[in-house]
Length: 145
Image 1 (cartoon, one colour):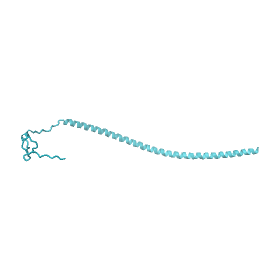
Image 2 (cartoon, rainbow, N blue to C red; image 1 turned 135 degrees about the vertical axis):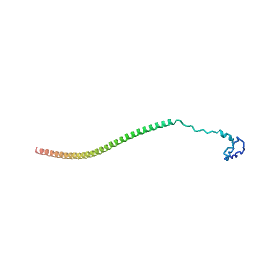
Image 3 (cartoon, helix red, strand yellow; image 1 turned 90 degrees about the vertical axis):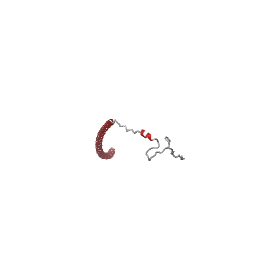
Image 4 (cartoon, rainbow, N blue to C red; image 1 turned 60 degrees about the horizontal axis):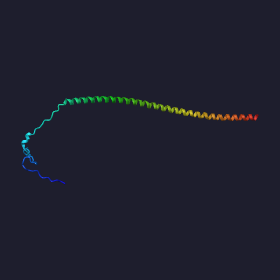
């Protein structure tokens, strides 16, 4: 709900509220004699410029030291990463060589395994031949006796 406001008073009495200033004369509708009592203060000058400059120097010095430390850390980390990278490359090469050697040993192992199986097979054949000969010999001795 909107309130309806009454217009300002157009009275000429001093101290009445709602007086409108006379803009054409540059004076307000209130007492003009009070205008001379208004003073303007100049801004306070800060005398701590040297303190601020010293603090800024210290801050810049601290920042420069931090940058040196960070640069040093960065260089150390880069060096460490390069060394680790070289070590990893070396390990990869070593693993590759080991895989090649393992494959070679696996091939040799399979070959030895086949040879052993062949020898076992031949041994079994010879054993059967010996048994057959042994049984024939026993038969011939029995026949002679």
